[in-house]
Image 1 (cartoon, helix red, strand yellow):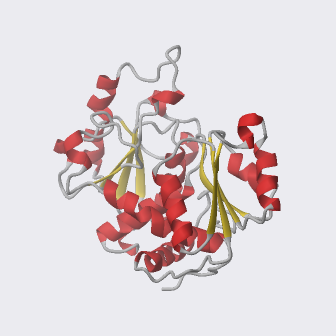
Image 2 (tube, rainbow, N blue to C red):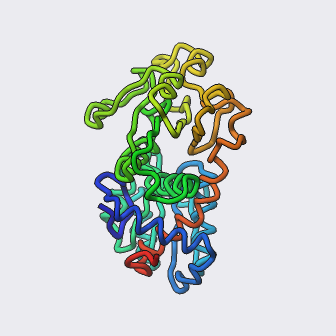
Length: 307
């Protein structure tokens, strides 16, 4: 269930998703106005980011908010200041919302305990990335016609589920929207909580197409979270053979998605990334409108989306 803080999409309802996507459409149409004038939004990014950081900043500035951006480099964190002390400092300076991206699971939830500001999770290690899932639903619902058109469609989440905070957010979001979800991944890249999801496991993208997938949602192979002492795949070439989305998979109006950044030729072949079947540019474009809606809810400007 969504609250003032946006920390996870676990337990989110279909109506909650509809409300926030309705408000995102208002912002996408340019009717959001300067709803955040007088509000202060702090972007606390302690992990590298392009799409998420830029879209949050654009969302806040276009709505008229005062924006403060901090990162580990050049801040007191570099001198050893803890996340808690940083959050307490931002709270004391009058933050209305703190957007947190951090390499540790649970960082945003921890931050929320030490501030009266709303905390928005912009990605916490292998934990959650709720706004990514929301913008994915926004882009996908636009592509198929409406939010209601998502119900009953099949989506295959492909690749490195183990290390993916995106997977842990999009899976409950897709399910809440009424979609049928399957995983396509080697056993070595599946998390222990996969059993709790009770999802079918398919051995390749080819099998996902045979299963009837309407959407192939490819995940980035996160090599930086793996070690040479504990390899998760035999080789990148072997991985791409079974789990890479290729031109041959684009039949029956199959749509392709990826949260970015894309490793071309690994998760998706280069000729598919910008093909007519790809929603990747639309996902990026959806970021500002969706994050505008999230900030409006988080700061109390919006209580319920305007239809």
